Each structure stands twice: as structure tokens, then as C-alpha cells.
Length: 145
Image (cartoon, rainbow, N blue to C red; front, side):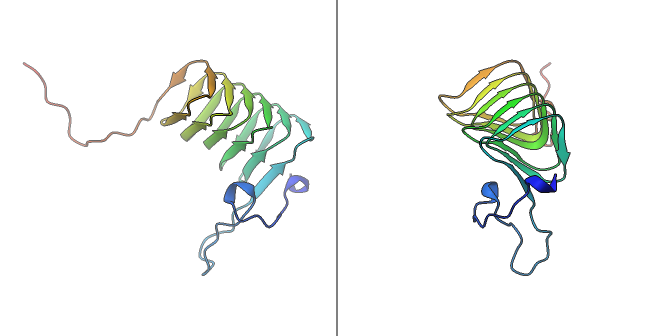
């Protein structure tokens, strides 16, 4: 997938910037960018962050954030820690941390994520399952007699 990765000098992490601190103690953030006008069929997987501004038809499984830009289109399931949708996704989403659908986003598919944020104006058609929801208290609720 290295042919799709590029360092374009943007400072925004979602647009290809680096999250490496000045002391270099953490690994450099890697991003794979599928540019507008690009069409991919098949499986996309790997340890990289993924920014989709083109079209992907197939399964996406990455170990970092998946961002579907406003012009991006995905037809197939997505599995990642964080999934951000600003474009169109037709397929189920499994996010181990959270799913975010912005006002311009559209999702037709079922969701499995502990945290879900859907902006006003976004489109969502499907079922949601909030497995692994974080608890706010470590003590059990009192029982009624």
C-alpha cells in the first residue's frame, strides 16, 4: 500500500501531518491517502491511518483511524478503532473506540461501537450496538428490596 502513502506537508493529523513529539519518543504517524478520483476494489488493511477522499469497494480493516472525507465513498464493511464519516458509507462499521458521523456524512449499515456521535443533519440507517460501553461508576447500583 506504500504507493498510496504520501507526506504532503499538511499539519492536520487527518490530512497527513505527524503526531511525533519534538523529542521523538513516539513513532511517526503514518497515513494512507486515497485521493479524490481514485477507485479501489478489494481489501484495504494495515497499521496505518486511512483517509478516503476517493472510492473504495471492499473491506477496510486498519489498526488506526479511518476518515471518509466529504467526497469519499465506501461500499463495504469498515473495522478500525476510530471511524469518522463525512462522506458516504454503505456497509457495517465496527469501531473499537468510537464512530463519528459528521453533518455531511451518510451511513447505511449496522454499527458496533462503544461510543457513537451523530451530528445534526447526518444520515444513518441501520442498527447500533454499543457493546463495551464504558461504565461511569465502579460501584454497582443499589438493589431495591
